[in-house]
Amino acid sequence: MASGRVLLECDWKGIEGVLVGWFANDQEYMRLAKIGVHDYFCAHILASKGKISVSEIPSLSLADAELKPIFRDLKTRFPKDRDDAKHCVHGQNYGMGPRLMADMYEMPEAEAKRLQKMYFELFPKIRNWQRSVLDRASRECKLRNPFSYEMPLWEVYRWDSKRQCYVLGEDAKSAIAFLPRDTAAAMLKEVLLRPSIRQLVNEGIVLASTHDSITAEVDERDLMSTAMLLKREMEAPVPELSNLSVGVEAKAGCSWHEEAMEVLDLSPVSQPL
Image 1 (cartoon, rainbow, N blue to C red):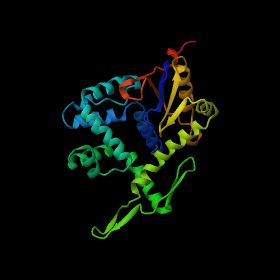
Image 2: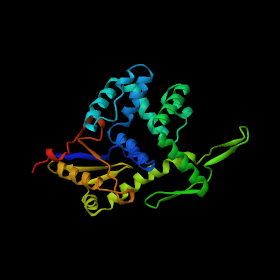
Image 3: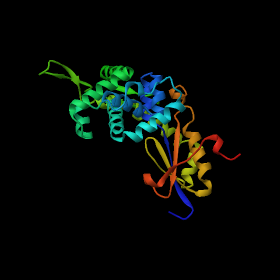
């Protein structure tokens, strides 16, 4: 990289969880997805194992500013349990079964089943939404997201002759994942097509994008202004999602390595007048 230039990455914070909550019409879950749903679920896991008392599970009556330091503390003190919570949250939101979760994350299948049960008891609207999506996909053989992206689906359920009942088919996980996954992709596409971002692309500043982030290479003197521009465009209300806005986190550094990237403070008070 040329001297005086740095990498900048702006990504939506918890967008997958936020969109799952949006589709499930669960405002409480959306709030947690923005500030620490993995940490909140981790607290329940810890209490179930006796590592903390039930009274130490943070109350959702607390303000976001009060919950965040509690969540950070749990993440620091119990990294393994927090990882298990994160894996369970992502896995259950996208239809992962307990056997696969046990194999992927090196835990007993009985523990994976226990965590899955706990998760859906804590967030029943997520389970209800998933079932409604599966039923609709099976009935209509397709799904359409708010941006009119469509996905054909054929075997959402299949008949199990041994058990004499319908079970989830090959397309079940795809059906559950489609709405939040492809809606996030559509949001990013819309951002990239905006004139201000296209200008950065044409100038060779925006280098790449993933499903939830934009990566750029900028002169150090332009770092904050470029970060603020990306933040503003990415946090703009989304008309297709009832003007939902998802927060953005920006990181910058000399290489695209986690340890080399530092979080930028883009709060209004930190910016020069």
